[in-house]
Amino acid sequence: MKRDEVAVQRWLILGLALSITAVAATRLLVIFRVDGVSLLEVALICIFTLLFSLIAISFWVACVGAHALWTGSLELPLREPHTAATASGDAGHPRTVLLVPVYNENAGEVFARIQAMRESLREAGAEKGFDFFVLSDSTNPDCRAAEIAAWRRTREDNSVRIFYRNRAENTGQKAGNIAEFCRNWGAMYDYMVVLDADSLMTGRILARLVSLMDANPRSALIQAAPLLVGGESLFARSQQFASWAYGRMFAAGLAKLQGPDGNYWGHNAIIRVRPFMEHCGLPVLPGRPPFGGEIMSHDFVEAALLRRAGWDVWMVPEFDGSYETSPPTLIDHLKRDRRWCQGNLQHIKLLFAQGLRMPNRLHMAFGALSYLSSPLWLMLILLFSAHTISIDRSPVTYVGRYPVLAWPISHTVAFVSIAIAAMMLLYAPKVIALFVLLHDREATRQHGGARKLALSVFIESMLSTLVAPIFMLSHSWFVLNILIGRNTLWGSQRRGGKGTGLANAASAFAPHTVIALGTGYLVWTWTPANFWWYLPLLAGMATAILFGWLTSLPAAGAAARRAGIFLVPSETTGLPIVQRVDRLLAERDPGKDAPGDVPEGEALQTA
Image 1 (cartoon, rainbow, N blue to C red):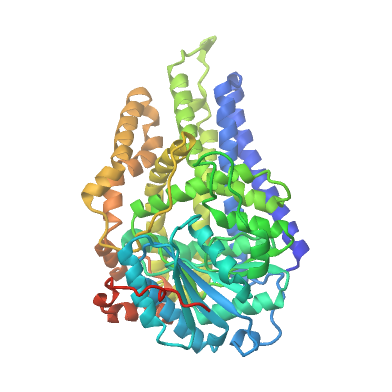
Image 2 (cartoon, rainbow, N blue to C red):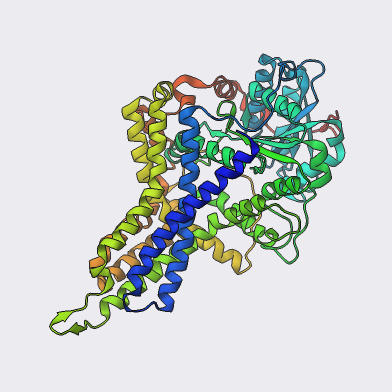
């Protein structure tokens, strides 16, 4: 596929999405204009058109990815390396550093992943070309001491060098952490691979990314799409299954449509250090947080700055070798979403920044809309409810002896067709992904067989239906808090645990339940004929406490695994690097990670 073909595909997908959106919006307009279009109905049409266009675009991106997976046409307009010498880690291999920013993490788990990646690099014959650098922003003294103790043990193996430093002040959070590294040590390396504390990448894909950078000197960043592994709770396992079953398809579609205008997800990506240092200094946004101040979601902005400087940014759908973990519970997922929401809404200030390319502006706009869509969906539901009630309570008029029927009755078929179209666009990608997997016998086997795979897709669809209204209310609350000026800060993330207690779930989701019950009562009282339309929405919110609690339990996840539900290749056939991490964690002595005295100056080994 050539670069000009990327532009053709973009216009084709945009045209298809806008076409079906226009059909749906026109259908809705036909319903409303029977007795004239009111301001309320104009607002309904505008909000509906925007939201419908978003799900239409997502649907067509999935179709592009499904076609690429089905036909095996995942090639990108990237020049492939002509020799294997660069990827093998020979003496002439460019120097690459793997950066592992940490903030009050479990040191044993972090260094177990590092050890597994070091061993994988050795097996790939590429260990001489890579260094590791643990960039600690940890503020907890016990965490810092545990990190240093684990670093000392890990560096005893000198096949791959590993360095450590702890910042006294974590200015700028992760972005500031990376920037500080670049100022002090960046000039020593050609490339850097930015990881998260839970990232895991094989030596093969790391060598592959380096060879692609060598072969494409105009490329400044190549993002590898990570898959989720290591999920134990039912929530984490459902998210993990979705990443393997659907995420691969969407990643392939994005890679094909983005071309050199790709985006950066903040981790599991290789970056050319020099252009990053020259062009990716982040501005401090004017005003006070949450909209002003330091940029929280730095990755989108850094990709945009690289593209503005004329460098290429790619995403490669390499589905074997790039991994991360999922938040273990719905509560942890929402805590992370709160920070991401603020970061993405900050990008609104940058949408019209000078020199940015249109694809990067769209990345930022869609990122913000991914959270703004929740209050928009809520507003759409409320406006539809108000309109329905007003129609139900309006007096019936007659032409002669015949009543003129109101639109909820006389246009039921048209309204149902719109609802069905929207539902099809939402759920069709899951069905398409199922057929793509069934087309691949090995993939079907790795997901537990055809029956278990189909059942897993069905159950995941039901769980996503229940959780959708929970996300809608939570994200709406996040947006409201940001709009009224309530700031949030980056904090440490929980990677595992025994689940959410019932009391904690009740505290977190009691508002959802109260809103569901109150709304259900009002709908039943004011417009009982339409109650069943609201039931799927109300069911998710009403059961939020039970859902948040049950899906957080590792026991529920283990039961699903025994039943063959949500199986993924990392569990059925096994991934050597994931298995190695599990063995290292099983063998470790927790006492070795206990805090100890740290001689001054020993915490940092310089390159």
